[in-house]
Length: 70
Image 1 (cartoon, rainbow, N blue to C red):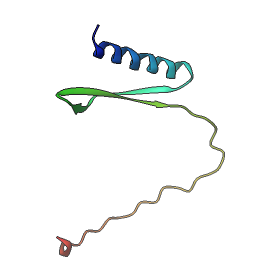
Image 2: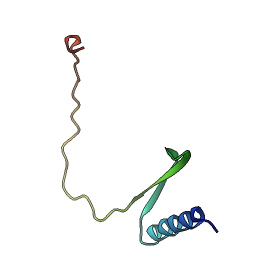
Image 3: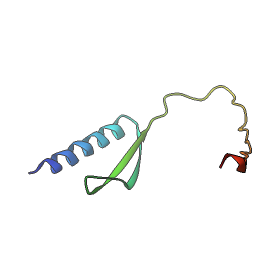
Image 4: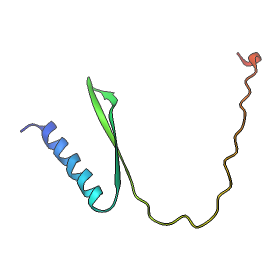
C-alpha cells in the first residue's frame, strides 16, 4: 500500500470522526489543483449555541468607481 492510500484513509477517518461528534460536512469536488493533481475540499460546520440577540438588517452600499483612477 502506498502513501496516497494511507493519506486518503486518514482523511476519511477524520471526516467520519467529525460527523460522529456532530459536525455537518460539505464537500467541494476538485476545487484545488496542485502537483499535477486535483484535490477535494471538505468543510465541517457545527452549531455550538442558539442565536439569542437580534442583529441589525444587512445594509447594502453602492460601489462607485471613478474612471480617473484607471
